[in-house]
Length: 602
Ligand SMILES: [Zn+2]
Image (cartoon, rainbow, N blue to C red):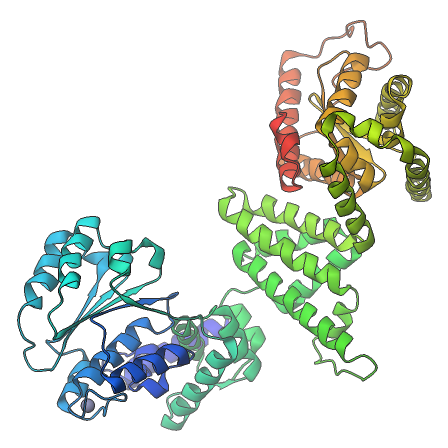
């Protein structure tokens, strides 16, 4: 509220003091000389050299993301070519030509936005018809075409004729964020320069300089901390223009201190406290807490895309801290008071790398997702699994995959036979450990769990009598839930899970299960952690939609005789619906867990 009042006050103040049209910071501080360009030294140096040596190309392609200075450099090039002192590597900025170009009033420097001039008639009128004439007042006629990739194909063709035989007094600059959309025929006639995203520290430095200039002029009185500037610089993702408009928005506050927290609030970023809490929940393996925090962010109207980005940046910062700490072993590293160091000690370096990679995947998936929150929830669940995965087990799985890849599918079970003794024992150990944990937690098996156990016991018995090697892989496995006709089976050891995923082995287990349960069923093998996740997701969906969990499709006690009391039609329908939704969720989860064959089977 206070901030809003302040904003209104300063807006009024702006109106009173500056009755002349307002010029944005970006325009006011647009570089007037090559040396002022931020973060594109490689481009600037090459262009200045070309001018010095008189090797001026007739067409340039400036490629790079928005806000990196493409149009600015194009104008500087126009100035350098047309300056009264020139052509000169650095324009004088005081001659008539320089001034005219700076003010945008030159007849010979023609800027057009291809996004609003896509039609071929417009290109003919604005460019092709003017090319033949000599410049009105300057040495070169410079055409700057912004967003050049937006031109239509016929426009490109019209342009191509000009580019094939350009008059000596004409220079084209095509600026684009999507260079791959420029036709190769055009591309090959241009000298290409790639504009890089500007590094955050360079952006922060420039913001600081501009702030000082504004403060000296007396137009800014706010005290913006270095942390706040760095946060803006990072949030701008390489675009100086975006950074400056964010700064501008902040300065509307007027007086007072602007710190990182103010920046977060004003720009709708998630607070660092919340990011730290989410990371801490990941370290605890606390799925419920992670999801609660996401829900809080949603309730506060935060942008979930921004949340993932912020979380990724935060995890990366933890990783950097971890690396710094490990390389400076023994010497005391200082905590910066944000608790970063304490938090990073809860993870291994490998875990943090895994989490960052996982979040990057989530961000990609969210672009294609219709339900952002669900995708993020599942992503965080995966991050938790990632954090729990020991590096040792992973390597073992990778080794096992290599082994399997070398063995023909048909002989997989036989191939593993000699190693039977060795493989069974760790599975047993793991299985007992898992059981102990469940008993310690005081979870008495419910009736439903008991039913599942009985069913799976029957399946295992049959498998044992038919193919002992497969049975060995399934020791310690549990049937954790049934969704429609899909059995979710948790496997004690990741290595065994990989072996069971082999199509021939899986088909065999599915056939036995189908015959024992007298229904056509498919099986998804999951690790213990994933099994917990599937159950948790089912519960989450149930809570979110107010649905009950899916019931078992049949009763084990009298599996052959039909049920005496048929459920009412509506109730049955509800069960089908909820089963359907759960099934879709699990399919989604499995797809995310990267089991393509499991998805194909549905
Ligand atoms: Zn000049």
